[in-house]
Length: 219
Image 1 (cartoon, helix red, strand yellow):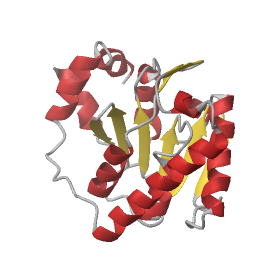
Image 2 (cartoon, rainbow, N blue to C red):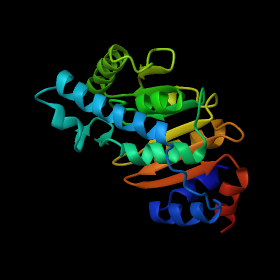
Image 3 (tube, rainbow, N blue to C red):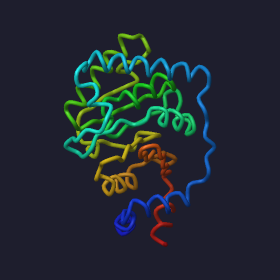
Image 4 (cartoon, rainbow, N blue to C red):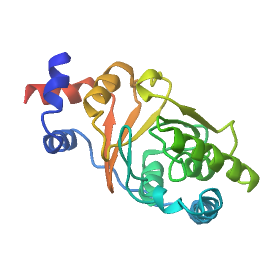
């Protein structure tokens, strides 16, 4: 296993090639009419809240930002939602978001549109406190988002237990944590669980099948 992990991250390009060989084709599912209405509503509310919470610095959180853990960049909400639909994230699905940032493009829309139960973990103090303000704002807007379906934590996501979640979401842009993440996936991703490896418009899925990693080692 240890050798597999070391070989696994020789190069991110090689990772993509070997990973995709073992993932069956998945038919992309589009949002339903009701889900699309919720999607647009969520986007409008997030934009309004952003300008209320950080009227001067709002642009800082919609472009690349240097942070302690690397580079912060928000996910593309349309990618997150379409792939959530495709993967079957639905009512009460337990979802863990690693490095949730403000949460406006991940945990809040996942909870509102699909009824998922989301946990977001963010290391950066400013982003974490911003996500709490977003949570308060979404609650006030009456979208059914509250602490029951969105829990936000500040800390290092390696210190948390990942084994309780059906879906784990990770945006890799600007991060150097991938090697440690692979180890954590191997030891904690639950049987049948799905790790969503996202990178600027590209979705990578890792199902918890040991042969995926063993296959790479055999190559």
